[in-house]
Image 1 (cartoon, one colour):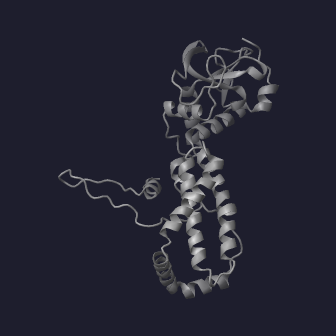
Image 2 (cartoon, helix red, strand yellow):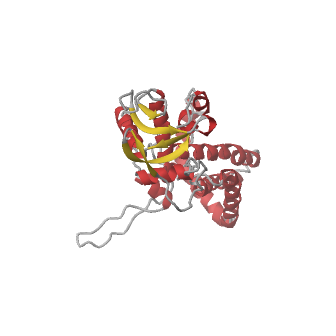
Length: 311
């Protein structure tokens, strides 16, 4: 994770000499290309700094592979000639202009998403660089211009949307909610309801909150501390790394996603001041809770079908 973030930001790990003076940092000087079957989990910022290319498992073209190996000694000469062409033709300003063009193009549909500017900028570099290579190969590749346009408007645009979705799924708040929904579905944890016959907590599953209201207006008063404890335990049992997120950060992410409600049941505007939690009594204990719509945890169908009387 540190390698991905440092390479994306052009930084490096700082070290000290024996006399406690700082050593010169040495960031990655070039592109970092890696292959693998998976991506480091819970690494939304690293994913936003990366361009992930899914490669399907398909029949191998062995003849093409042999041709590539046979001509591989010429690749470094081709790259050197491409760089010389970029300098000779003064393509630097054109490249910068195309990066700005594609960044604006990709940013529009994802504005407001987590890491929107970073994702748009990284993929804009990708698209603009491909355009330059296509122009360089135009004398031997007649379809280069059309291919570059299709690559930027269709292929890279699809990568941008996939990256936004993947980065959002890697947020601690998203993992927390997904895991909590599963625990509720399988009865590993429960929500206290006014209809409970055993409000003292001796029912199935640990109690992590309570339901208030009825019908479409039903809400959940959720103890983040109790729910996070159950989620961390479940992740460890599955062999997954626990969430590296504090309660305050988790609440801030839920707020940024527009999932929190105030005392009156109205959505909390992200970034507005004020307390996001309050104390209530659950199972005869006072705990601090946040409020969110019931269907966020149970799904709209389950929340509607469930009979929740007004307390």
